[in-house]
Length: 196
Image (cartoon, rainbow, N blue to C red; front, side, top):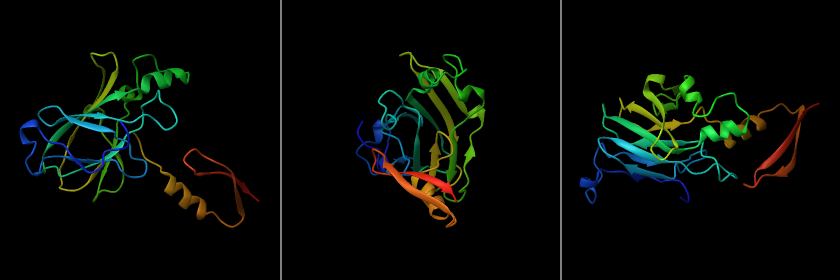
């Protein structure tokens, strides 16, 4: 997987080759903080989603953030993050969550917002399932019913992207000094911030 999906219509096999119709979901993650490398249609409005590895670390797949458009009002879908690797990540950090456990089993759920509802809300625990697949890897599955014909975004948790951070820094009072210490691999500034 190289790069994020970009305005990709995903259809049932019997609709391949036909024009995109309402209900054929269109996935996009080609935006800041987006992460979704591949989407496959399973059956009956179920989708396998493959997230790209985390930046600068080829072992972990934790963050996801993508948008969906073109859903029918009332359409219920099941999304499976099939290459989720959160458990090993938490174990290596020394988390007290035991093997096979996840914050998703402790009540956490993905977040969603839409064009008309700009505030993020957490999906109910009753909509999320975190389970071990046949290959031994863990899968995060969640259901969602689209109630309005608009753009929806789904994410691992509340996104806080680089542009938002930069806007906050620029809005700091002039009494707060900041200087560039270094640059990240993505050519972004690493700042030192001091209150004078």
